[in-house]
Length: 227
Image (cartoon, rainbow, N blue to C red; front, side, top):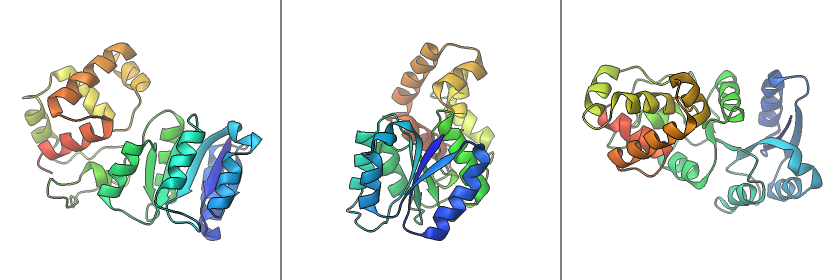
């Protein structure tokens, strides 16, 4: 497995390498310290063998999010996770909508980062709990979980009661697993249904909640709960 790490802070790079080394003894790393090195890495012949890219938002040579767009467009087979010092929910939403598979604030622990990376490598999307529990007025809920793979349990009864007015029981089951970042394949396996049926349920969920994608569906469900 080869992982691209793009960050201009050497201590962060070394810390990420050390933790992600737990993925297995065959894990290799490609390092880019600025946008020029990032471009060189994604255009090299070896880029086709990359399994994952972890990219900082703020590096020398960065202009907006152009470097992320370039990676996503040039290496569509490589999942991209953003590493950032920001915890702005609006920024997270815009980047997830752009096509990244995860957003990890640098304030999070190494264990959360490792869990998020494993989730993305398995085909899931990592959405920070901070975003999942955002209130309708834009403020973050005071009840947060630091476990990357578990949704918040607070007010779950209220959430289900409100969602039952919009969704069927099976659709609520699908949404619950979706909020854990699980891909369609794992949702289908957990519920004992086909991936095609999962897609049908997701389409119905999107229509009922008036949203366009998976991230918006999870955020909308949290807002309905009144968190």
